[in-house]
Image 1: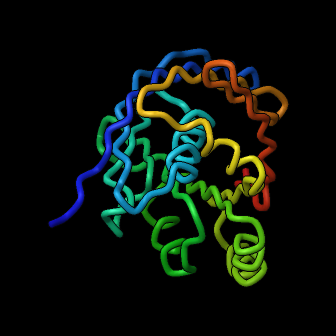
Image 2: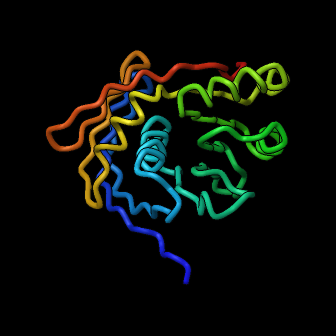
Length: 182
């Protein structure tokens, strides 16, 4: 018998001084049975880093043709495609063809670094691709904050991120490996 997703309720308050975005989002996040707390929290962090009124979680892990998060226009075009992990070159190429912007948040320490070394030369042709690495220490600490009901505050300033849940605070410094060519 298949396991069901675990539902998390998150009140996410975002104060992004870099983009002048200040909103609270009440999120219902389904955690796939194979998903770790660390990955769940990275997904929520990715949402916060790109927060927008049209940003939505997708079916994620259970589908190959959707990212983890996306933002669509009112006419259903994909404006922002956000994926986690280390997608193949084929997935990157397809994603960059489907969306105006593609953002990859990789994590996992040395496995992410090995993936990037292997794939970075083939990504230079994608002007709409951004690749950001999250340090293993930071994502491990984020995973420790996970609980089924959370009030989460994310403050972003000068590309530094402070995440607080209750009395616990984690500082995250995303490292951009590739920026979108403007």
